[in-house]
Image 1 (cartoon, rainbow, N blue to C red):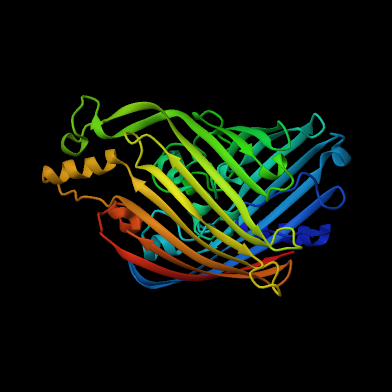
Image 2: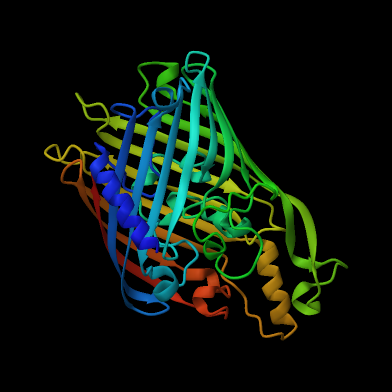
Length: 439
């Protein structure tokens, strides 16, 4: 049934009019208005092949892909809502990802890897006020569409660079993130050319409570949950070029997120005993949070160009150790657009993503080891390094190979990829290539 609906939607898109080009990741940069006319449609396919060459759970090859259908409409011309715009997108996720089957790591190898499904993702309306200084958005989207992330990091294919793994690991159902978005409201207020304030509130559990794969609990992306504890973001943005036109472009952020739900202690039960020994119910903590900072800066620009050159970025995020499996996340790297003057749109990138298992979680496993419960010590971190090059053939076609090295895959935790057993995995070396077709 899902594929029949998809075919009808594709036919409608192809007959309706001009198509918008997609981006190289699932989180698409959407302009404030349709490029042409009252309504614009988009269609893109991202197809990729991955091979685990060494380490992890086992070597092998997988293939997966993501088709995205989108619509962007001017509601003023269509429905008389002057200044309001609508955006919606539907995903068709296919194939088999490499992370679960072959690697066994926490930081998913591909940012389009997900449980096979056809589902709604984005569906929101937006309007600007006060001479475009204030923008309001209401509807459904993922937190990583706008919050926390570096624009340079969007080049990379590992999922951590598009949505920090600290949230994906610690929040209920992984938080509002591809492929399951959540109802939300957010605003951006432009204080000056240099400073902006952005805040958003999301439903804090896009799939709802339950066992098993949260992507199946919200199989079609239409749960529209509104009664879960909220997830709230606040960010202050600084653009150096807004301070002085002599500065190179960049975007610096400081922020905090807060989740108002209940979170289980990693080590102690409600009576203060050690969970690994007593097996009792965990002590509950009210709320969870993280502080973070992002530095995203072009440091050298090729003379005569607008955006070609070398960029650097870094992101750091820290959360309480007592209620989180991961309490520190750090990523950073470099990108070079137009490394070769004959290839002005191509991009080269090198990056790393480091996630540290919390002291509370490590203590739990050490307690179990000391009590001879069968538990083993876990690794203190998982580290991903990625090298990638995006070859842009045209506005419609690009090809992007990626090499990734994963240190301590899964950190020796009992993950679903390891059938919930503590399997110490050898460092993995993964190679893949993604082809992006957009119309």
